[in-house]
Image 1: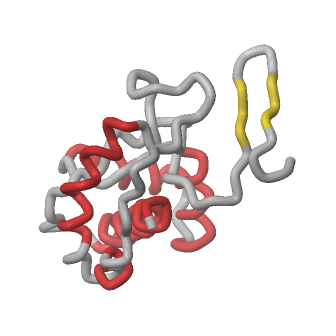
Image 2: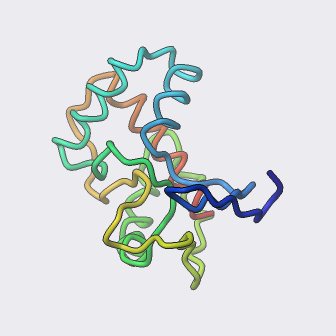
Length: 144
C-alpha cells in the first residue's frame, strides 16, 4: 500500500502511513523481540509491570495513533521525557504539532497507541528499563 492509501474491509478502515507511529501491542512484541531479544511472554509481563507502576498507558491495544486527548496530555509529558537517561536529548526536539492524527473512525473513546504517562521512572528492573526506553523512543519519534 502507498502512503496515505486507504483499505476498506468488512470490519475496519486502515490508513497506511510512512510516518512514525506509537507502539501498539503487536508492534511492541515485534520490536522487543528484534531489538531486545525478549520473548512475547517476557514483553507482556514487563509491559504490565510498567503499566502497574503507572509509567505507560494500557499496553493491550491495537491502535497506534494519537487522539486529541492524548496529544493534550503529551504537552505536559514531553517536559518529563527530557530527563530520560537514554533518550532525553532526543526528547528536546519534540515539537507538538497543532494537528493530531486521528484515523478514520477513531476517537478518544476507542483507544490509542502506548504512551508514557509523565511519571518519572524509579526502581525499575533492567528488563523494565530496557522496555520503557523502547516505548520512550517510539513516543519521541511519533511526536518529533
